Image (cartoon, rainbow, N blue to C red):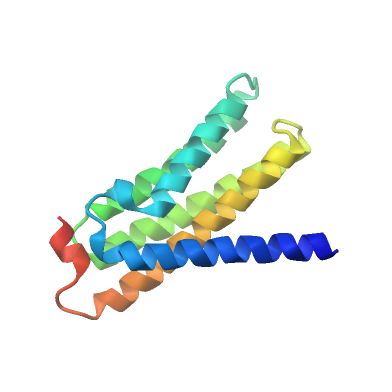
Length: 155
């Protein structure tokens, strides 16, 4: 039980650190590739492609790959939209896609499509991405109330 608590605390620390990093660089984001949630979702997508490349369950394989790609693409597309409200909408879609990918990872684990230990790491990664996106959404909400902000000068 103690090792599980240590793991949870370690994950929370990593997420908190990542959120602080996102907030500290928020003003310096120049392109969607600078967004940490996009970077991690790209890693997730590449890992899913690697694990699923030989999988013959084409429907499942295609759906989990699309869900992962959707996370990073919604972040990218939303970043280049007109304002905070629209960007926030795309971030919520990315967060939903992240939940879809995580849900499918539980099935992938049960069906032995991905080794259990690796699948657990991917599930943790989806939780981290969701938390980062949520923190970004909250930051956008706070920035939305100011007339001049980082996002309006990024485009």
